[in-house]
Image (cartoon, rainbow, N blue to C red; front, side, top):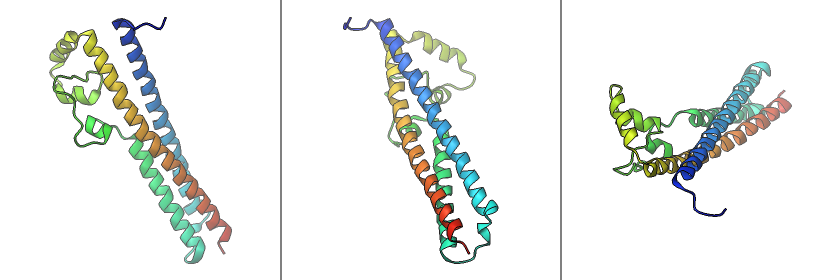
Length: 180
């Protein structure tokens, strides 16, 4: 109790951490998808159901335009959350991000697809077999690090998208309440 983990226990722990991270990625993608659907419904209701498109001047028109800008910006943020990040640079949003020269991120699809052509399954398999327990542990820790940054970025954007959607709704209520 309280001692240092042996290599096998450490590897299992790191793998479990990455699995939890991947579930958080799914949670953020689901939240973004939900907000995306709310935005689409809200914008449709404002422009079609409430017939605000027929307003041609005044506060209701400005509130409608502001609601539309908030809704579309929120939609854009949600779509950006959902889009895949196929390279380390895109995942970390850093043009200088790169793996160490001797490192192989074998659990990241972007690395595998870039480092190995579709006809190099044998070379990939061989490289995988040559990885030591220490290499695999390092790979799992790197994945946890990278995915943690992805989750943070997605979480911030989902939060911003949510606030923008709520602003869209509030401005839409103003447009409906003050229209002639």
